[in-house]
Amino acid sequence: MTKPPGAPPSHDASSDSGPTRVAIRTSGAPAKSAITAQAVCAGGFVFTAGVIPLDPDTHQLPSGDITTQTHQVMRNLGAVLQAAGSSLDQLVSVTVYLRDWADFDAMNQVYVSYLNPPLPARACVEVSHIGDDASLEIVAVALRESGEEN
Image (cartoon, rainbow, N blue to C red; front, top):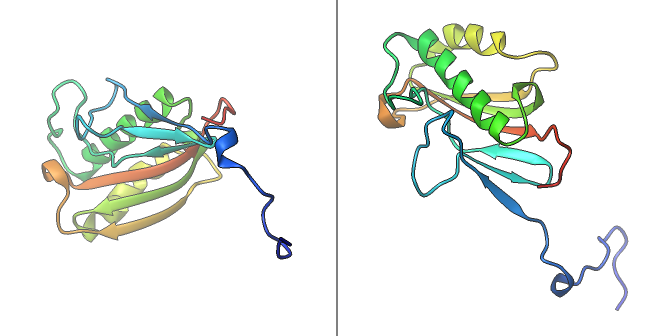
């Protein structure tokens, strides 16, 4: 059988186990659920679950406004990425979920203070509810610094 031009090379799936995925868990950031990973490493990337501003020691929201909550989210995100062999400097894509769009400027000022150029691609969306009554949640994709595939 002739392959069409541009088709990927043939691969016999029975000859190897294929790409692997590694679940990441760290006590440096709160887990949203006992059944889901805080992140998954696959193909040289780290894919985080939603990160909210719970204190990793108390599992409570910090008292304060969106600025306080954004600082906590960025610390939590940094801890998850570090546990996965990455860092905030390796972020390539971020989605920020805000409960109130009026918080965007204050959130953004804190968010960018944790990052170095080039900044990751980002989407920001207003939503009606975030778990634990948080004001924001961040989902991210980062490169692994170790250069490992998984």
